[in-house]
Image 1 (tube, one colour):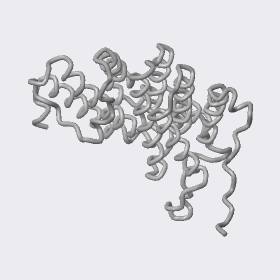
Image 2 (cartoon, rainbow, N blue to C red):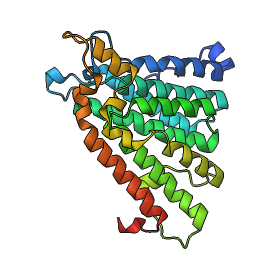
Image 3 (cartoon, rainbow, N blue to C red):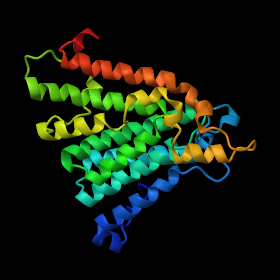
Length: 276
């Protein structure tokens, strides 16, 4: 006799009766998983004192939530309210990880890069299926301005904006215009049936999410955020200039990556994208 199989998990009647309502509530609370615990910094993500290769339980849960968010965006039939809740979840998660100034630990950066990757991928899907409202776009830009000290932001911004540029050029100039080379993985970032209007609107808005790229060579501008100011007033040796935080030493490299991305945009519009 084969062993008895456990019964499938039962869905509580209230959830079955109003799944969208409870989905929004669940998404609203999931961002708490990404918040650093008291007396801990971003190194909570990986237990660095044990060699840097032991992933904490919290990090595992964060990765699961990010996979869930990506699967929901790609496969679920979401309404406008559910899309809004999903985007707000990703914005909250990214804010918890990226806003505080912290040393660039490679392990912590791995999760920071992942949350940004999922944020931009889901955001572009939302632009195709349920275009985000102006307040959501404003929130995205305001948050990205606060994350500019993080190298993964510039990398993911470059990736998303270049993919949109490649699709935009096809709509504007047709198939005879020199194609901009995009990897197969990145090419799938933009839905094949995304309308020309959605591509254009998304391209313009995402291009402006990080503000003026020249600010990346101005530590005194990048550090004018609530998180940097909090750092400056909580130092034991008194008020410290927030622009002197060690993490801002990475700004020259981040600025260089941003300029390379902008140069790629210019070359693409000049029909020289294939030469890069």
